[in-house]
Image 1 (spheres, one colour):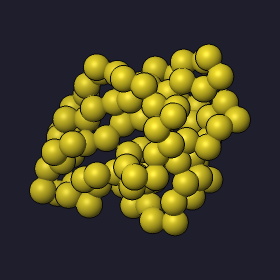
Image 2 (cartoon, helix red, strand yellow):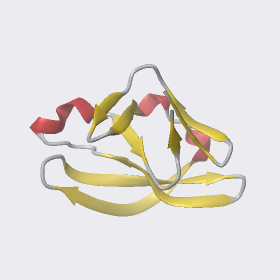
Image 3 (cartoon, helix red, strand yellow):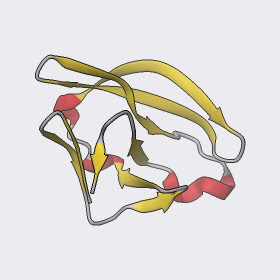
Image 4 (cartoon, helix red, strand yellow):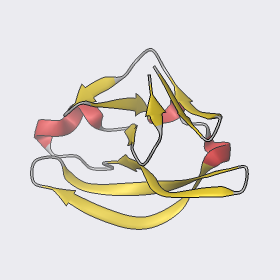
Length: 92
């Protein structure tokens, strides 16, 4: 699987976990040159608290486009150490 945005490959891996229709990539597959800080947080009733990264590609910012669960619930333990995408990031 490959995650792309604004012409850049954000992550690529043959090892993704699908939860609620989203591919969770190993965090190690994330192309860090495009990742920037975000202090956004959200909560999922069954997965726990999500943290976010923003993306910066060719001077364009995609805020909070990457999310991850640093301490997922026991029910979501399979996504620990993984990231997922939204906000126009194509995963195919």
